[in-house]
Figure 1 (tube, rainbow over the protein chains, first blue to last red):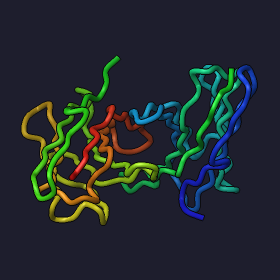
Figure 2 (cartoon, chains in turn purple, yellow; figure 1 turned 90 degrees about the vertical axis):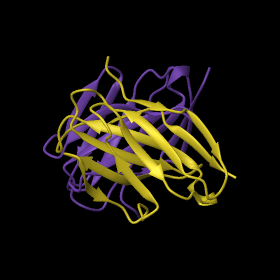
Figure 3 (cartoon, rainbow over the protein chains, first blue to last red; figure 1 turned 30 degrees about the horizontal axis):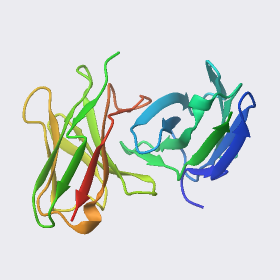
Figure 4 (tube, rainbow over the protein chains, first blue to last red; figure 1 turned 60 degrees about the horizontal axis):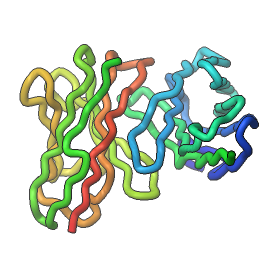
Amino acid sequence: SQQGEEDPQALSIQEGENATMNCSYKTSINNLQWYRQNSGRGLVHLILIRSNEREKHSGRLRVTLDTSKKSSSLLITASRAADTASYFCATDVGAQKLVFGQGTRLTINP
Amino acid sequence: EPEVTQTPSHQVTQMGQEVILRCVPISNHLYFYWYRQILGQKVEFLVSFYNNEISEKSEIFDDQFSVERPDGSNFTLKIRSTKLEDSAMYFCASSEALYQETQYFGPGTRLLVL
């Protein structure tokens, strides 16, 4: 697998349900960042979790990081139609660049 | 809230033409980046820039690409002789510091090479 792979590739849930997306990576990281992209639009930063952190919250978002498994998860609670977007994890490997995954396309059905 | 801006939002050009994509990073940020996203594919790093010089570049960033900070606010990406495969969304990003810092992205410029 490549650095920063999200799973699943697509997720469709009902409004109000929770959505969980996973990200796996291969190399050591300084931090991992999650971004949202609405169709054809820019990347909106959601949350950054450092390599020495295990969990972080921001509003309805909860991110976990397991460096032993080289994986992270993004949980969106009480989903809304406006959460429909693609979600990307990006790993900061310390080379002054972010390495992005392929993304998870999340659809929230009303 | 400060944000990264990019102009133009869309650009259509003929193959072989030069294009300049412009970005205004967040004002107190010191590190600047260009990424691109070919339709349906991953966001890919192109180049990072600090203290008026390139700090890191990817294999995509070949001699046809160049970056410049012509004044205190703008950051540009020039593609000298565009190819069909340069068609993509180009994102500018900036960060306040180098490590452990969020990179804030602009809305992107969609480049179409015909």
